Image 1: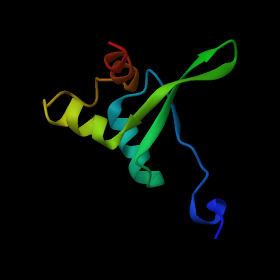
Image 2: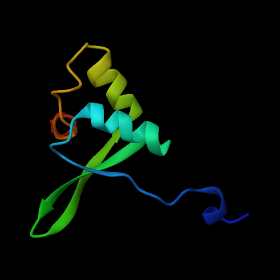
Image 3: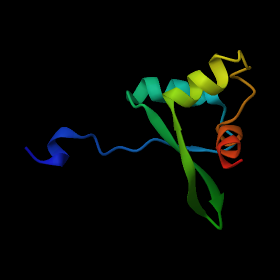
Image 4: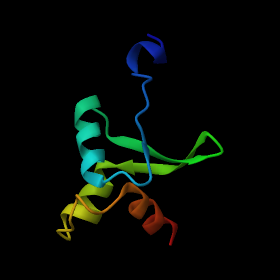
Length: 81
């Protein structure tokens, strides 16, 4: 069995200003464990990083932060520190 037969090649991409709530909803809708975070530069989407289910649990849910205010870009920035 080839890799293409066992893996779904669809990648979910979000922009850095999208909320983590939107990220969780997209992960659920597409049944994925992570999303690529990108930003628009000169008409192109440049990948900045990946947000995973674990990021949402550890960084947002456990400390009880507001998932409707925190953006996926905030998590990417946190990982850059």
